[in-house]
Image (tube, rainbow, N blue to C red):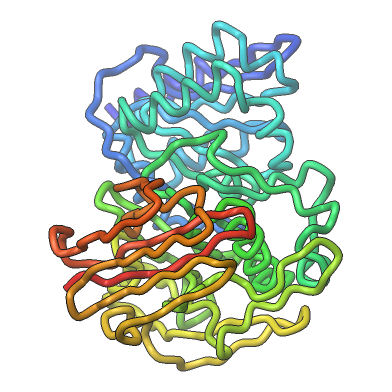
Length: 431
Protein backbone atom coordinates (compact mmCIF):
# COMPACT_ATOMS: atom_id res chain seq x y z
CA UNK A 1 0.00 0.00 0.00
CA UNK A 2 2.84 2.36 0.86
CA UNK A 3 4.59 1.61 -2.45
CA UNK A 4 1.39 2.21 -4.40
CA UNK A 5 0.75 5.50 -2.64
CA UNK A 6 4.28 6.72 -3.33
CA UNK A 7 3.97 5.91 -7.04
CA UNK A 8 0.60 7.65 -7.14
CA UNK A 9 2.06 10.67 -5.42
CA UNK A 10 4.90 10.95 -7.89
CA UNK A 11 2.40 10.78 -10.74
CA UNK A 12 0.54 13.69 -9.15
CA UNK A 13 3.65 15.83 -8.68
CA UNK A 14 2.84 19.16 -10.25
CA UNK A 15 3.83 22.82 -10.30
CA UNK A 16 1.12 25.45 -10.25
CA UNK A 17 2.47 28.73 -11.58
CA UNK A 18 0.86 32.03 -10.82
CA UNK A 19 1.83 35.63 -10.61
CA UNK A 20 2.15 35.60 -6.83
CA UNK A 21 3.20 32.02 -5.92
CA UNK A 22 4.52 28.68 -7.10
CA UNK A 23 3.31 25.36 -5.67
CA UNK A 24 5.04 21.97 -5.57
CA UNK A 25 2.96 19.00 -4.43
CA UNK A 26 3.57 15.37 -3.54
CA UNK A 27 1.08 12.92 -2.00
CA UNK A 28 -2.66 12.38 -1.93
CA UNK A 29 -4.75 15.33 -3.15
CA UNK A 30 -7.69 14.42 -0.89
CA UNK A 31 -7.98 16.53 2.28
CA UNK A 32 -8.00 14.01 5.15
CA UNK A 33 -9.53 14.51 8.59
CA UNK A 34 -6.93 14.17 11.36
CA UNK A 35 -6.35 15.07 14.99
CA UNK A 36 -3.13 17.09 14.95
CA UNK A 37 -1.34 17.85 18.20
CA UNK A 38 -0.12 21.35 18.95
CA UNK A 39 3.63 21.91 18.96
CA UNK A 40 6.30 24.45 18.04
CA UNK A 41 9.73 23.81 16.53
CA UNK A 42 12.54 26.38 16.67
CA UNK A 43 15.46 25.15 14.54
CA UNK A 44 18.92 26.68 14.42
CA UNK A 45 19.34 27.39 10.73
CA UNK A 46 21.80 24.91 9.20
CA UNK A 47 20.94 21.27 8.41
CA UNK A 48 17.61 20.00 9.70
CA UNK A 49 17.67 17.72 12.72
CA UNK A 50 15.92 14.55 11.58
CA UNK A 51 14.54 13.60 15.00
CA UNK A 52 13.12 17.05 15.63
CA UNK A 53 11.43 16.92 12.21
CA UNK A 54 10.02 13.48 13.03
CA UNK A 55 8.61 14.95 16.26
CA UNK A 56 6.99 17.68 14.15
CA UNK A 57 5.60 15.33 11.49
CA UNK A 58 4.21 12.83 13.99
CA UNK A 59 2.09 15.61 15.47
CA UNK A 60 0.44 16.10 12.07
CA UNK A 61 -1.28 12.71 12.68
CA UNK A 62 -0.89 11.53 9.10
CA UNK A 63 -2.32 14.74 7.69
CA UNK A 64 -1.28 17.35 5.15
CA UNK A 65 1.99 19.23 5.66
CA UNK A 66 2.47 22.69 4.18
CA UNK A 67 5.89 24.28 3.66
CA UNK A 68 5.94 28.04 3.16
CA UNK A 69 8.85 30.03 1.82
CA UNK A 70 9.60 33.10 -0.29
CA UNK A 71 12.58 31.69 -2.21
CA UNK A 72 13.72 28.21 -3.24
CA UNK A 73 11.80 25.23 -4.51
CA UNK A 74 10.56 21.78 -3.43
CA UNK A 75 13.59 20.69 -1.40
CA UNK A 76 11.47 19.72 1.62
CA UNK A 77 8.86 17.63 -0.20
CA UNK A 78 10.57 14.26 -0.49
CA UNK A 79 12.43 14.78 2.79
CA UNK A 80 9.17 15.20 4.69
CA UNK A 81 7.09 12.75 2.64
CA UNK A 82 9.37 9.70 2.32
CA UNK A 83 12.85 10.13 3.82
CA UNK A 84 12.04 10.16 7.55
CA UNK A 85 9.68 7.21 7.77
CA UNK A 86 6.70 9.17 9.12
CA UNK A 87 3.45 8.68 7.21
CA UNK A 88 1.74 11.89 6.12
CA UNK A 89 -1.00 12.35 3.55
CA UNK A 90 0.78 14.97 1.48
CA UNK A 91 3.48 17.62 1.46
CA UNK A 92 3.03 20.86 -0.46
CA UNK A 93 5.57 23.65 -0.77
CA UNK A 94 4.18 27.06 -1.66
CA UNK A 95 6.74 29.69 -2.60
CA UNK A 96 5.20 33.12 -2.02
CA UNK A 97 6.77 35.39 -4.63
CA UNK A 98 5.23 38.61 -3.35
CA UNK A 99 2.65 39.94 -0.91
CA UNK A 100 -0.25 39.22 -3.29
CA UNK A 101 -0.02 35.54 -2.36
CA UNK A 102 -1.42 36.46 1.07
CA UNK A 103 -4.76 37.24 -0.55
CA UNK A 104 -4.86 34.40 -3.06
CA UNK A 105 -7.84 32.07 -2.60
CA UNK A 106 -5.87 28.91 -3.38
CA UNK A 107 -3.05 29.75 -0.98
CA UNK A 108 -5.46 30.63 1.82
CA UNK A 109 -7.42 27.42 1.26
CA UNK A 110 -4.27 25.30 1.44
CA UNK A 111 -3.18 27.04 4.63
CA UNK A 112 -6.59 26.41 6.20
CA UNK A 113 -6.45 22.72 5.26
CA UNK A 114 -2.93 22.18 6.63
CA UNK A 115 -2.31 19.83 9.55
CA UNK A 116 1.24 21.12 10.03
CA UNK A 117 3.04 24.24 8.75
CA UNK A 118 6.78 24.62 8.28
CA UNK A 119 8.46 27.98 7.61
CA UNK A 120 11.67 27.56 5.61
CA UNK A 121 14.76 29.69 5.92
CA UNK A 122 15.19 32.85 3.91
CA UNK A 123 14.71 36.53 4.68
CA UNK A 124 12.45 37.10 7.68
CA UNK A 125 11.52 40.56 6.47
CA UNK A 126 9.97 38.94 3.38
CA UNK A 127 7.84 36.80 5.69
CA UNK A 128 6.83 39.70 7.92
CA UNK A 129 6.20 42.17 5.09
CA UNK A 130 4.29 39.64 2.94
CA UNK A 131 2.11 38.15 5.68
CA UNK A 132 1.67 40.58 8.58
CA UNK A 133 -1.74 42.31 8.74
CA UNK A 134 -3.14 40.14 5.94
CA UNK A 135 -5.60 37.23 5.71
CA UNK A 136 -2.54 34.96 5.84
CA UNK A 137 -1.72 36.15 9.36
CA UNK A 138 -5.31 35.48 10.41
CA UNK A 139 -5.11 32.00 8.89
CA UNK A 140 -1.89 31.21 10.77
CA UNK A 141 -3.35 32.23 14.10
CA UNK A 142 -6.50 30.21 13.42
CA UNK A 143 -4.32 27.14 12.83
CA UNK A 144 -2.27 27.74 15.98
CA UNK A 145 -5.05 28.58 18.41
CA UNK A 146 -8.21 26.91 17.08
CA UNK A 147 -7.14 23.94 14.98
CA UNK A 148 -4.01 23.70 17.18
CA UNK A 149 -1.63 22.18 14.67
CA UNK A 150 2.16 21.93 14.93
CA UNK A 151 4.18 24.73 13.38
CA UNK A 152 7.91 25.07 13.01
CA UNK A 153 10.71 26.69 11.13
CA UNK A 154 14.43 27.14 10.68
CA UNK A 155 16.60 30.24 10.46
CA UNK A 156 14.23 33.03 9.31
CA UNK A 157 11.35 30.59 9.78
CA UNK A 158 12.35 30.29 13.43
CA UNK A 159 13.01 34.00 13.95
CA UNK A 160 9.43 35.01 13.12
CA UNK A 161 7.75 32.71 15.65
CA UNK A 162 8.16 34.63 18.91
CA UNK A 163 5.63 37.13 20.18
CA UNK A 164 8.59 39.48 19.77
CA UNK A 165 10.93 39.18 16.79
CA UNK A 166 13.86 40.77 14.97
CA UNK A 167 12.42 41.64 11.57
CA UNK A 168 15.68 42.46 9.70
CA UNK A 169 13.72 45.10 7.80
CA UNK A 170 16.86 47.12 7.05
CA UNK A 171 19.30 44.20 7.20
CA UNK A 172 20.93 42.07 9.87
CA UNK A 173 22.67 43.48 12.94
CA UNK A 174 25.83 42.19 14.59
CA UNK A 175 26.50 41.73 18.28
CA UNK A 176 28.99 44.62 18.24
CA UNK A 177 26.49 47.01 16.63
CA UNK A 178 23.68 46.03 18.98
CA UNK A 179 25.77 46.33 22.17
CA UNK A 180 27.41 49.61 21.17
CA UNK A 181 24.00 51.16 20.49
CA UNK A 182 20.83 49.20 21.33
CA UNK A 183 18.92 51.86 19.34
CA UNK A 184 21.04 51.28 16.22
CA UNK A 185 19.23 51.93 12.94
CA UNK A 186 19.39 48.20 12.18
CA UNK A 187 17.65 47.24 15.44
CA UNK A 188 14.25 46.47 13.91
CA UNK A 189 12.08 44.74 16.50
CA UNK A 190 8.41 43.83 16.38
CA UNK A 191 6.16 42.81 19.24
CA UNK A 192 2.66 41.39 19.53
CA UNK A 193 1.65 42.12 15.96
CA UNK A 194 2.07 38.85 14.06
CA UNK A 195 1.88 35.25 15.34
CA UNK A 196 -0.06 34.55 18.54
CA UNK A 197 1.21 31.35 20.12
CA UNK A 198 1.09 30.58 23.86
CA UNK A 199 4.29 28.54 23.47
CA UNK A 200 6.25 31.66 22.52
CA UNK A 201 4.55 34.35 24.61
CA UNK A 202 6.97 37.19 25.46
CA UNK A 203 9.78 35.22 23.80
CA UNK A 204 12.20 36.42 21.14
CA UNK A 205 14.21 33.71 19.41
CA UNK A 206 17.52 33.87 17.60
CA UNK A 207 19.28 31.33 15.39
CA UNK A 208 22.74 30.57 13.96
CA UNK A 209 23.82 31.06 17.56
CA UNK A 210 27.31 29.65 17.11
CA UNK A 211 28.17 31.16 13.71
CA UNK A 212 28.50 34.05 14.26
CA UNK A 213 28.24 34.52 18.04
CA UNK A 214 24.79 36.07 18.51
CA UNK A 215 24.51 35.89 22.29
CA UNK A 216 25.31 39.56 22.77
CA UNK A 217 22.84 40.83 20.23
CA UNK A 218 20.15 38.56 21.68
CA UNK A 219 20.76 40.17 25.06
CA UNK A 220 20.47 43.58 23.40
CA UNK A 221 17.12 42.52 21.90
CA UNK A 222 15.85 41.72 25.40
CA UNK A 223 17.21 45.00 26.81
CA UNK A 224 15.39 47.01 24.15
CA UNK A 225 12.13 45.13 24.55
CA UNK A 226 12.12 45.49 28.33
CA UNK A 227 12.98 49.19 28.01
CA UNK A 228 10.39 49.89 25.32
CA UNK A 229 7.44 47.92 26.66
CA UNK A 230 7.99 47.48 30.39
CA UNK A 231 7.17 43.78 30.08
CA UNK A 232 9.40 40.85 31.10
CA UNK A 233 10.77 39.12 28.01
CA UNK A 234 12.56 35.81 27.52
CA UNK A 235 14.88 34.48 24.85
CA UNK A 236 15.49 31.13 23.18
CA UNK A 237 18.73 30.88 21.21
CA UNK A 238 19.45 27.87 19.02
CA UNK A 239 22.79 26.79 17.59
CA UNK A 240 22.90 25.89 13.91
CA UNK A 241 22.38 22.12 14.18
CA UNK A 242 20.16 22.12 17.27
CA UNK A 243 16.38 22.35 17.59
CA UNK A 244 13.93 23.21 20.37
CA UNK A 245 10.56 21.42 20.26
CA UNK A 246 7.86 22.86 22.55
CA UNK A 247 4.85 20.65 23.23
CA UNK A 248 1.26 21.56 24.11
CA UNK A 249 2.19 21.79 27.82
CA UNK A 250 5.02 24.29 27.17
CA UNK A 251 7.70 21.68 27.80
CA UNK A 252 10.72 22.46 25.62
CA UNK A 253 12.77 19.49 24.40
CA UNK A 254 16.22 20.03 22.84
CA UNK A 255 17.45 17.90 19.93
CA UNK A 256 20.94 17.79 18.44
CA UNK A 257 24.03 15.59 18.19
CA UNK A 258 25.56 16.34 21.57
CA UNK A 259 28.05 15.17 22.89
CA UNK A 260 29.56 14.33 19.48
CA UNK A 261 28.98 17.96 18.51
CA UNK A 262 28.37 21.10 20.53
CA UNK A 263 24.69 21.45 19.64
CA UNK A 264 23.30 23.73 22.35
CA UNK A 265 20.15 25.71 22.98
CA UNK A 266 19.99 28.65 25.38
CA UNK A 267 17.06 29.83 27.52
CA UNK A 268 17.43 33.45 28.65
CA UNK A 269 15.61 35.33 31.43
CA UNK A 270 16.21 38.40 33.55
CA UNK A 271 17.47 37.71 37.06
CA UNK A 272 15.53 38.46 40.25
CA UNK A 273 16.57 42.07 40.76
CA UNK A 274 14.75 45.26 41.67
CA UNK A 275 14.73 46.69 39.05
CA UNK A 276 15.79 43.88 36.72
CA UNK A 277 16.19 45.83 33.48
CA UNK A 278 19.34 47.41 32.04
CA UNK A 279 21.14 50.22 33.85
CA UNK A 280 21.90 52.02 30.57
CA UNK A 281 19.82 51.43 27.44
CA UNK A 282 19.70 54.73 25.57
CA UNK A 283 19.93 55.96 22.00
CA UNK A 284 23.56 56.33 20.98
CA UNK A 285 24.92 54.91 24.26
CA UNK A 286 26.69 51.61 24.86
CA UNK A 287 24.50 49.08 26.63
CA UNK A 288 25.12 48.37 30.30
CA UNK A 289 23.10 45.59 31.83
CA UNK A 290 25.20 44.33 34.71
CA UNK A 291 23.14 43.80 37.89
CA UNK A 292 26.11 42.51 39.92
CA UNK A 293 27.39 40.51 36.92
CA UNK A 294 24.18 38.45 36.92
CA UNK A 295 21.76 40.39 34.71
CA UNK A 296 20.55 37.32 32.84
CA UNK A 297 20.20 33.78 34.11
CA UNK A 298 20.68 31.39 31.19
CA UNK A 299 20.15 27.65 30.84
CA UNK A 300 22.62 26.17 28.34
CA UNK A 301 21.54 22.66 27.39
CA UNK A 302 23.00 20.16 24.94
CA UNK A 303 20.58 18.64 22.48
CA UNK A 304 20.95 14.90 21.85
CA UNK A 305 19.41 12.45 19.40
CA UNK A 306 16.51 11.62 21.71
CA UNK A 307 15.74 15.13 22.92
CA UNK A 308 16.52 14.00 26.45
CA UNK A 309 16.96 17.45 27.98
CA UNK A 310 13.84 19.47 28.75
CA UNK A 311 13.09 22.95 30.11
CA UNK A 312 9.69 23.74 31.60
CA UNK A 313 8.60 27.06 30.10
CA UNK A 314 5.87 27.38 32.70
CA UNK A 315 8.51 28.41 35.24
CA UNK A 316 11.76 28.81 33.21
CA UNK A 317 13.56 26.98 35.98
CA UNK A 318 12.80 23.27 36.00
CA UNK A 319 15.31 21.35 33.87
CA UNK A 320 15.28 17.58 33.48
CA UNK A 321 17.59 15.16 31.70
CA UNK A 322 20.32 16.04 29.28
CA UNK A 323 23.59 17.84 29.90
CA UNK A 324 23.06 21.43 31.03
CA UNK A 325 24.57 24.28 33.04
CA UNK A 326 23.35 27.60 34.33
CA UNK A 327 25.25 30.71 33.15
CA UNK A 328 25.22 34.39 34.11
CA UNK A 329 25.30 36.88 31.24
CA UNK A 330 25.89 40.60 31.60
CA UNK A 331 27.02 43.61 29.59
CA UNK A 332 29.21 46.42 30.85
CA UNK A 333 29.76 49.47 28.61
CA UNK A 334 29.00 47.46 25.47
CA UNK A 335 31.15 44.46 26.44
CA UNK A 336 29.40 41.08 26.65
CA UNK A 337 30.48 38.80 29.53
CA UNK A 338 29.62 35.27 30.66
CA UNK A 339 30.09 33.34 33.90
CA UNK A 340 29.83 29.60 33.31
CA UNK A 341 28.66 27.08 35.91
CA UNK A 342 26.54 29.71 37.67
CA UNK A 343 23.86 29.07 40.26
CA UNK A 344 20.25 28.34 39.39
CA UNK A 345 17.86 31.29 39.37
CA UNK A 346 16.21 31.66 42.76
CA UNK A 347 13.38 34.10 43.35
CA UNK A 348 12.05 32.24 46.39
CA UNK A 349 14.20 34.07 48.93
CA UNK A 350 14.39 37.68 47.77
CA UNK A 351 15.63 40.44 50.04
CA UNK A 352 13.03 40.92 52.75
CA UNK A 353 10.97 44.10 53.06
CA UNK A 354 12.37 45.92 50.05
CA UNK A 355 11.87 49.67 50.04
CA UNK A 356 12.10 51.36 46.65
CA UNK A 357 12.14 55.15 46.34
CA UNK A 358 12.77 56.78 42.95
CA UNK A 359 11.17 59.48 40.85
CA UNK A 360 9.01 60.47 43.86
CA UNK A 361 7.49 56.99 43.98
CA UNK A 362 7.63 54.99 47.19
CA UNK A 363 7.00 51.23 47.25
CA UNK A 364 7.39 48.65 49.95
CA UNK A 365 7.23 44.91 49.34
CA UNK A 366 6.68 42.89 52.48
CA UNK A 367 7.48 39.27 51.67
CA UNK A 368 6.72 37.97 55.12
CA UNK A 369 3.10 39.02 54.79
CA UNK A 370 3.11 38.75 50.99
CA UNK A 371 1.78 42.23 50.45
CA UNK A 372 2.69 45.02 48.08
CA UNK A 373 2.32 48.48 49.64
CA UNK A 374 2.24 51.53 47.38
CA UNK A 375 2.66 55.08 48.59
CA UNK A 376 2.21 57.12 45.46
CA UNK A 377 3.26 60.69 46.14
CA UNK A 378 3.42 62.04 42.61
CA UNK A 379 1.22 59.72 40.58
CA UNK A 380 2.00 56.66 38.54
CA UNK A 381 0.34 55.76 35.31
CA UNK A 382 -0.22 52.08 35.87
CA UNK A 383 0.73 49.05 37.94
CA UNK A 384 0.52 45.66 36.24
CA UNK A 385 0.78 42.20 37.78
CA UNK A 386 1.50 39.31 35.38
CA UNK A 387 2.12 35.61 35.71
CA UNK A 388 5.45 34.12 34.63
CA UNK A 389 4.33 33.84 30.99
CA UNK A 390 3.47 37.55 30.88
CA UNK A 391 -0.32 37.16 31.04
CA UNK A 392 -1.89 40.18 32.73
CA UNK A 393 -3.66 39.28 35.99
CA UNK A 394 -4.34 42.73 37.41
CA UNK A 395 -4.00 46.35 36.32
CA UNK A 396 -4.19 49.12 38.91
CA UNK A 397 -4.29 52.91 38.69
CA UNK A 398 -5.25 53.78 42.28
CA UNK A 399 -3.49 56.64 44.03
CA UNK A 400 -2.68 54.48 47.06
CA UNK A 401 -3.08 50.76 47.34
CA UNK A 402 -2.23 47.76 49.48
CA UNK A 403 -2.25 44.57 47.44
CA UNK A 404 -2.33 41.15 49.05
CA UNK A 405 -0.62 38.38 47.14
CA UNK A 406 -1.84 35.66 49.51
CA UNK A 407 -4.69 34.63 47.19
CA UNK A 408 -2.29 33.99 44.33
CA UNK A 409 -1.21 30.43 43.62
CA UNK A 410 2.38 29.63 44.63
CA UNK A 411 4.87 30.77 42.01
CA UNK A 412 6.64 33.75 40.51
CA UNK A 413 4.78 36.91 39.53
CA UNK A 414 5.97 39.92 37.57
CA UNK A 415 5.21 43.45 38.76
CA UNK A 416 5.64 46.48 36.51
CA UNK A 417 5.05 50.08 37.59
CA UNK A 418 4.95 52.71 34.84
CA UNK A 419 5.31 56.44 35.18
CA UNK A 420 6.58 59.32 33.07
CA UNK A 421 10.19 58.62 34.04
CA UNK A 422 10.24 54.97 33.04
CA UNK A 423 9.33 51.52 34.28
CA UNK A 424 10.15 49.77 37.56
CA UNK A 425 10.06 45.98 37.45
CA UNK A 426 10.20 43.28 40.09
CA UNK A 427 9.70 39.54 40.42
CA UNK A 428 7.57 38.62 43.46
CA UNK A 429 7.42 35.06 44.73
CA UNK A 430 4.31 33.70 46.41
CA UNK A 431 4.95 30.69 48.65
